[in-house]
Amino acid sequence: MTADEKYTSDAPRPLALVTGVGRTVGIGAGIARRLAASGWDIAFTYWNPYDQRMAWGAERGQPERFGGC
Image 1 (cartoon, helix red, strand yellow):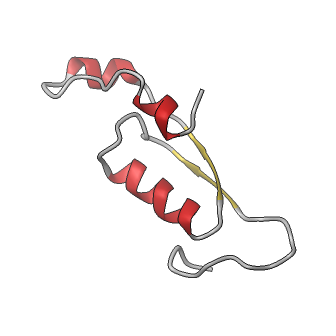
Image 2 (image 1 turned 90 degrees about the vertical axis):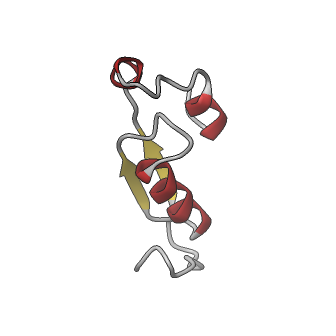
């Protein structure tokens, strides 16, 4: 199944682990959103110290808004 196909089976939903979802705008967040919209359950990770070192800085509270803890 691709991310473009909607999951509609009664079987357990597929699960994806997406890394690098610490920012709301980025490849990791885009992939996670696309899979979730297609019916996948998503687990994701992020590491704020990396973004804090970069010129763009960390987005405080953004992973929680995306659905993380």
